[in-house]
Length: 112
Image (cartoon, rainbow, N blue to C red):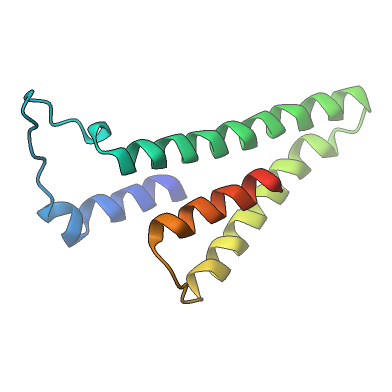
């Protein structure tokens, strides 16, 4: 529900409503033709794949060790960490370009 609410907020904000797609010389107006969006898609897709794989792993480990609590505890820990991380990240003013921030955050996530 929170994801749906967030998507609705982004889609109805003034910046999203003002944005207009431009066609390339080939007539393609796909947002994925922009390099930055492809990098963002790859980054978020990789992070989502990692978290999804760990969720499946937690269910397998819960079954293997006969500890049903693990199947819900690990995803709950990820969710709590995500919320807290987002709140902490938003309270700070970060130096540097947004691209650099994204790359550093992604590298930190991969290392973690």
